[in-house]
Image (cartoon, rainbow, N blue to C red; front, side, top):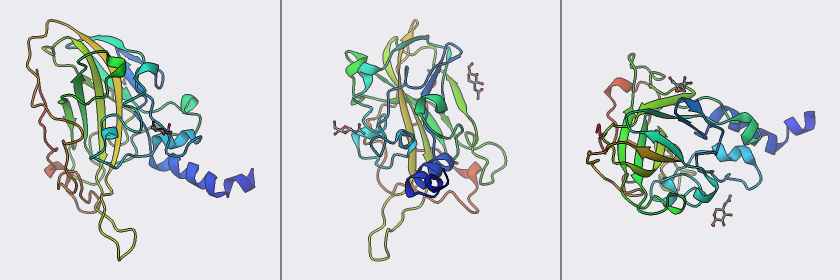
Length: 255
Ligand SMILES: *[C@@H]1O[C@H](CO)[C@@H](O)[C@H](O)[C@H]1NC(C)=O
Ligand SMILES: *[C@@H]1O[C@H](CO)[C@@H](O)[C@H](O)[C@H]1NC(C)=O
């Protein structure tokens, strides 16, 4: 055991304990559902190392920015839950027993969070999220203004209300938690590269109700964020006053 603990792979895995998490469990109809039952499965960074599913995503220009690593294509393995417009929906961080290892069971990093919807034009299981998206919830700071006074920091779950006039139909429901970080260089002679971390998941839901609303503004993912934009790629440490932070475009559609 001792030799394993000091091996490089154990170090990597243990580092994962402290640093990362994934939103693997949908909360619907007041039930915290099992990991990857209604949330599309996210591929690990290192094949065969299950805990690396929790590793952050970095590339805002990739189609995988919609639902995380390879999750545009895991819909056929994912169930769809029926929820009423006007009811609560949410995400809970990963489940130790299912992820097969020490995924963090709380939102370990600071930063803003948001929840989004995209209506599938055809079958939801094969929908890759390449249509229109709108935002239904956004949280930034809580009172205080210090480094750790972000709303989601240290929480294990987050629930929001589906706007009551949301048009009925099958949707991808997306959570995005941003851990803002300044651009960095691997070496002094190399260019600055983005280093902000994104924790993203998509669930499959069918919304029922009267509808009647016109969701918007609508955006595409990728496309919603540009590299280096100031409200996504910045230094969130030190003297940064989180109460002064304004979440990036688009604004929330309230229904
Ligand atoms: C979200 O909803 C679930 C199920 O009702 C509940 O167990 C959990 O405590 C809620 N989370 C928060 C942060 O209120
Ligand atoms: C992700 O998808 C690509 C392309 O289909 C595939 O080559 C790769 O093995 C997948 N990665 C994982 C970790 O499943």
